[in-house]
Amino acid sequence: MDEQQRLESIRRASAAPRLDPETVRAAQQPVLQALARAGFPSDDLSSFARRYAPVPTAAVQILLDELEKTRDDTIREWLARALTASRCEFPGAALVAAFDGSKSPLVRWAIANALAETEASGVEEWLVQRALDRSLGKAREMLMLAVARHLSPERALMVLRQCLPDLLGHVAIGLREIGTPEDAGRLLEARASAPAWAKKEIDRSVKLIQARA
Image (cartoon, rainbow, N blue to C red; front, side, top):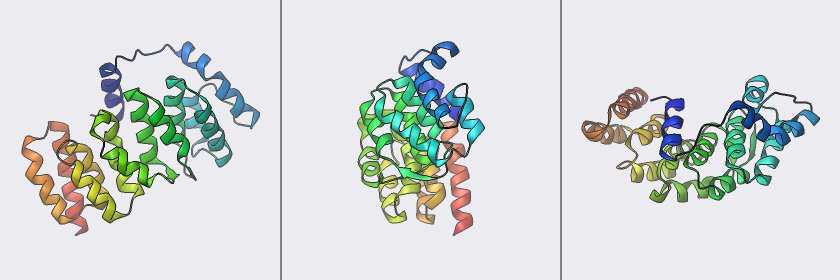
């Protein structure tokens, strides 16, 4: 299951309807106008991210400012997606506040994905707390990769191992980057009861962990 399929499954589970393109563009206008004034014109946030990737620092700050201001979950989702195209370090406070301020599984998943793919700083303690909070449901999935990338290896392994029983496939993805031979063994032990997509992730992770050993 790829990222788009996961997002669609989360959208269905949260009963969130797909908005038509015109509605999305209209909702995005305040953000797009702020970006255009700073020299980053674009028709929508999706094409903005493709056009300007890696997103420049000045544009990242605008996206963060808009994320702090908005209470619209549609805009939060698209801002998080746009930030995913950045490669500069930036304070992660706006992302984590938007995650905590939204009840939408889709928005939370998009923000968790942004945290996994960006250089957001100052999010370590927050990641530990949210990664271990089972009440968050699917939003924790991409947090596993963010944990692996933002925490020290020792602390990340502690968190990932605690999450292994209920997030097997996503923990396998996180362990792919920092796991030990012992972790490879744990993944193989759990493989039999895993769904097909998770078995593929486990096999890939075990191969990479063993190659590093």
